[in-house]
Image (cartoon, rainbow, N blue to C red; front, side, top):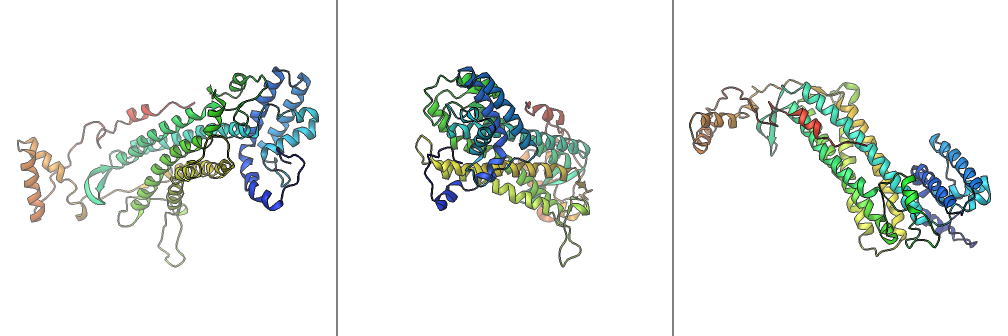
Length: 426
């Protein structure tokens, strides 16, 4: 069944190409298409297109279909072009004329738009909650290991003293920025496009404010052309937010892979969390975090992919937009899995005691030594040259560990302030 079927058979080769993977992808938005269809039906009843008894029948049938979706028994067979045609067919089969009326005053264009925006809204919320879980785990780890020192690096060269607490809480605080960006994307998505039909509205006296309230959108996208112009633009905005979060997770995964290596040996994981080698029995490979790194690097390309698909399209609907669903939904599902396994991994992390008296860390405290001379009356440049000369001559020796007490430093992590910065979640 096709919503645009006029009784003319289409070439099977053309049909297979144009349908693509919609049947598989659309399972993810079935729940939201049903939700939007129910709101649309209630609005049609209000304006007199549906009788009250027809609305009751539709409500009951949609509830049955929602139960099938929740139970994973809802299927989109090859006879159907997409989830929208499948749902309309089911309603018609079960209800007759009442089911045939459900598409009145809407187009598949706004039907797809509203289902996708509901999916995006819901999943952006889920991802933010998952980030909050990792955030809490990181702050707990930072508190637990705040006194355990760790070498800091610039250019991958030993630089200045850091700590496990500083490392964990750094990623916690940077996740806040990612959530802020996701919430900005969510605010843009939270506008109801239903009622824009094919992009030019309807001659029916539809009540778009009613469906906005029923679908729990914060706002209505008033202009019907503007509503359709969000197709592609919404995805680009979301992809940027998802990519920023993936950037953070990828960098963190790289740190973990680096710190697990024997040359660093700062952290470890239980044997069952790592993989081995087919010929080297000593190996404990960080495959989980390497895969996270790879998946997150791929997610960062999503924004460019969306832009290249849509950047030169004029206003109005184009079939190119169909190609957005697969990478967008795949990105959401991948990122949710990555966030879940990342937190699970962090809960298994084993922090090791780092011997800062090892020869390779002998210059870790040179800046502290310079600062000590300055505090005793030397100018910074004089102190820098004095310590620099000692380094060159091989006579430098660290005196003692200095306290870094300003806010945000290793001895004053400001964990409560970081915790308070996390945005409020719905």
